[in-house]
Image 1: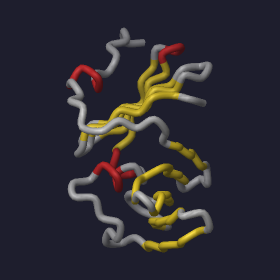
Image 2: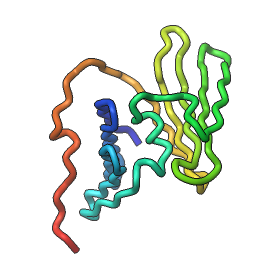
Image 3: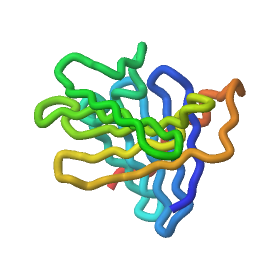
Image 4: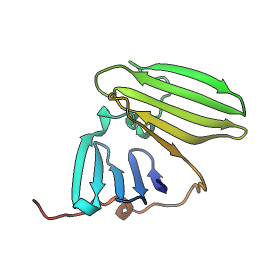
Length: 144
């Protein structure tokens, strides 16, 4: 699915998927909120239990304690950095792909402990723009 990513470091990320059904991922310093607008439902997970916590941390560490980090240079000027943890808080794998010239994040792949992979390719990036708090506001659906 295509979509839009807005990030304000540290800890703030919103991914809006344009697919059917629509899906929004919104982070706070503590939670990853999964917003399903068609169902008017928001589910939350502790951000510390997801590999996303690694790129939202302050400061970012590509060799965090308790994780295994493997760096691989691939043909075509791509460097992959895979950060992996088998179990416990933050378990899963986060693979970051950077172009080497210029050195820039172009894609990340998150694999959860169940083996489900989500790949995000970054295109048309814009840096340095202010992002209002309202961008990360959660919907206020009525209680079920």
